[in-house]
Length: 259
Image 1 (tube, rainbow, N blue to C red):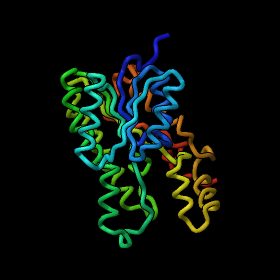
Image 2 (image 1 turned 90 degrees about the vertical axis):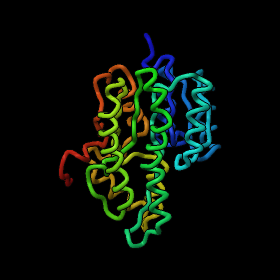
Image 3 (image 1 turned 30 degrees about the vertical axis):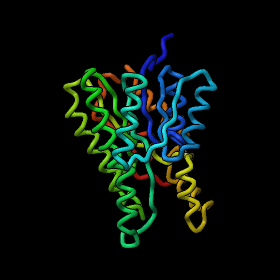
Image 4 (image 1 turned 135 degrees about the vertical axis):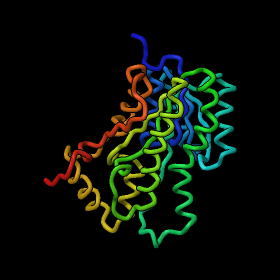
């Protein structure tokens, strides 16, 4: 049976842990050559090593996605090595849990840079190669917070709302080149970022249980469940899908829920 991403090249940012790492593994299993990009070199190296040890193909790049020079170098190096980019998965992200008046401008700018402006840079430097081939897939990691407000995370919610609308607009801009642009909107996923979020609260255990109680399926999602959604969007099974937001959230967006 042919693999879903046979001979394709995929760049995944934030691939050193969590959803990005799970997606890198799954894409590699389905035949993609994966460019593992992460701010933390040791995390990127570890993901790539795990993939290569399992008969996949991956290379690691340390990159700050808020730096356009580094992002352009990531794209250019990928082209030099593989001569193509089929999938761009903008997955790098961060969260700041603070009221607006308690945030420094530098914190706001850093979060917007990682969550939103990084997509601008990555698409800017990748899209020309995709247009030349008249083919490509861009996947942005948004959030259930793209649709709903959330307590004490104003910058994060603003950034993820921006990711959703940027995705839709890019889908319209590049449909004529057979380039699909979609986003994934995860709910609460068991990742290092979520655990750090709980650890920063006054009572981590209580915060986690309170969050879990709000999810209809009564558990946090596994990163592989989000990766499976990314694989669908990257594959030919979704060749007619563009400009959409795929929610993988355990039912959290279905409506008001109280157990």
